[in-house]
Amino acid sequence: MVAPSISSEHVSSVADHFGFREIPFGVAPDPRFFYDHPVYLEGLDALAEGIEAKKGFMLVTGEVGTGKTILLRKLMHHLETTVRFVYVSSTSHLTAHGLIERISQCLDLSGRDKTRLEMIQELNSYLLQQVSDGRTVALLVDEAQKLSDEVLESLGDLSNLETDEQKLLQIALVGQPEVIAKLTKSSLRRIKQRIAIHHQINALSSISEAEDYIRHRLEIASYQGPDIFNKEALEAIWCYSGGTPRLINIICDNALAAAYRAGKRKISAYLIMKVAGNLLLERGINDWRNGSSRNGFSKGKPAPVRINSKIAAIGENVRTTSRPADTQPMELPAEEPVLAAQSMVKEPTVSALVFEQMERAATEAIGPMAKHIVVDQIAALGESRETFPQTRLNELIQRVSEEIFNETMRANFQSTMARQIGARKIIHPL
Image 1 (cartoon, rainbow, N blue to C red):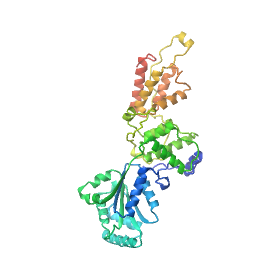
Image 2: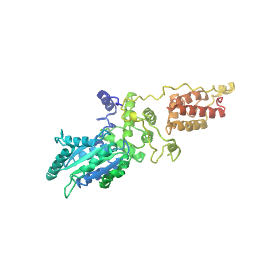
Image 3: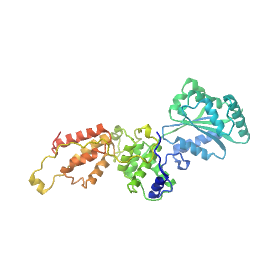
Image 4: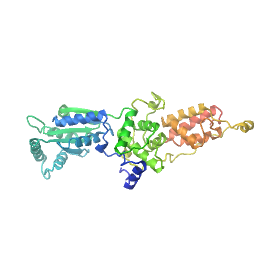
């Protein structure tokens, strides 16, 4: 699926609206935005040391979106004066012959119309000349989990290019954890045994780290204004991203675009929830039930986030309206008549216990954003929680229902509310 194109005029408008020099949350692996968190700095130092010490084979693994590619870009920038890099982004269709051809092309060698053996011999001569000139050549293979066994075996052949003192070609395999499973095969054991360095990259492990990451990218974009994301919004970003940098970028980028279209310069947790919903991001309900903080968000590492693979690269043009297209009006029974004498004195109001039950039922369907949604919908009706009239309760339930994207969960929420409220004789039960 091709990501929707974003016009330069729109990008400029969003940047101008917030006062950015450039868009801070792009998904391109720009090394200027490299986040100097210890786990990334350790990975950078390990790779740099391995290449400079000519250790031969290195391995970096990490889940999707954790920042492996931007680490490689930073490495290339960091050692550009002393190392000649060959960067290859793997595909499942890459062959052993195709790999040698790519390397030859990147090094300006004449690999056309030559056999694989001839190309390797030419590469060996080139590498010897580079060593004589005091330069190092490093091959960076990104998305290594996509490599076939044949290509991995050919990398083992390339690692055999050496002198008595050193390896001629430094090879760094970078990929998702599946590459480790590949290397456990008996046919690939010679490669596994040659790995001198293995560094694992993980997602950010706390809300504070996610907040620092967001602040870092805003600073690189030269933003010097007041906080854009309030505390609840930052916690919501943490919840829906699972601490994965790529997802943080996607959520923040879409939230900025939505705020620009609405003419706002502040981003709330409610807006983050709507953006995350449209990106089909989900959270595990067990994580909301157990070990939650005072705001309803887990302070520990969040449950894994699931994202539809078809929208992993989606851009700013994601629709930000949250009402499901198939939402049908909720059919709750009419309110129980109130005695005339009572209504003349004061309209009955909804008790705090009912709101607590509503928040619990909504949390089952939406997650930790439920409390914020209920508060926002009460305000949207021009009412307050303390004096909310019973006559508008059905309307409030309907509005909260429209924020639940899953049809089954929406029906469960409505049924729960009808049952709970009916039991308290505020409205007739179904």
